[in-house]
Amino acid sequence: MGGNQSWVTEFTLVGFQLSAEMEVLLFWIFSLLYVFSLLANGTILGLIFLDKRLHTPMYFFLTHLAVIDMSYASTNVPKMLANLVSQKRTISFVPCIMQTFFYLGFGATECLILVVMSYDRFVAICHPLHYTVIMSWRVCTVLIVISWTCGFILALVNAILLLRLPFCGPRKVNHLFCEILSVLRLACADTWVSKVVLFAASVFFFVGLLCLMLVSYMHIIWAILKIQSKQGRMKAFSTCSSHLCVVGLFFGIAMVVYMVPDSKEREEQEKMLSLFHSLFNPMLNPLIYSLKNAQVKDAFHRALQKMRSI
Image 1 (cartoon, rainbow, N blue to C red):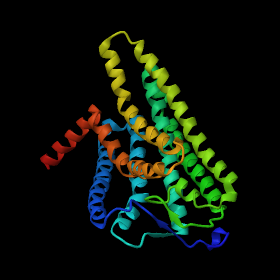
Image 2: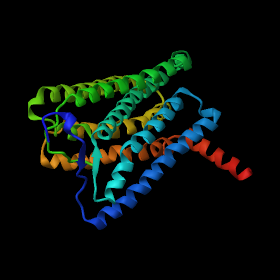
Image 3: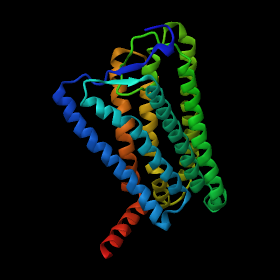
Image 4: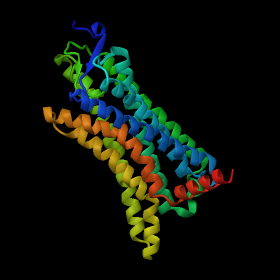
């Protein structure tokens, strides 16, 4: 292996390193979860598209969240599934960097859309009389375009910086897929400044977004506490409880993955937590929004009734 990244042709994805029987079992379990994730998010998309009662800003943002979750899972899971039933676990350099780019791009975009959704809930609870004016369709469209654009600009900057790093070996990525921290560990030791800059940029981005959401929810909680009736407080809280669950899962796992000190044990924990992000989180999000949301459940029942009447 030479001292320049152009010499690198492929990496080896280490994965879980389990017995062949256990990996075949995991293949079938993860395959079922992946298919269920696609079906669950596809169902949410279909319900929102077909039911005019769900054509509101909140569900407009939810459609983009569902698209991201489907794309997020599809970026990494198929390759991971192929590696579970294959002895050859290599990935070429360019596909590895592309996998890192899309993983970061969809992850950053999801963060931004979660922030936008928290702002939507803030307006709905704190300024209900002006909601339709503040959250007009033009504003919603602009917020979505900004979220996608900024998310993938961040991913592009990270990918360009990653491409500029020399990889001197070893070529084994101690992960299930080309996750940025695992790939960064393979870069030459003399590039530690670039590695710190690359890592710090992502951390500041996620921490900044988390702070924005915390500010929004502090205002939301304060507004809910000022509501006089218990029924009114419960109704106001129910409008943002699903989003709070999704935010807690997403940022809670991200904080554990990226802010825990580096160690051998941490690398194994990283695999499990990243698997949760890539496979379980996209599956849980539509379940959380459907099980805890009366409007989505009503739309699902109406869709079933229409199917039976045909």
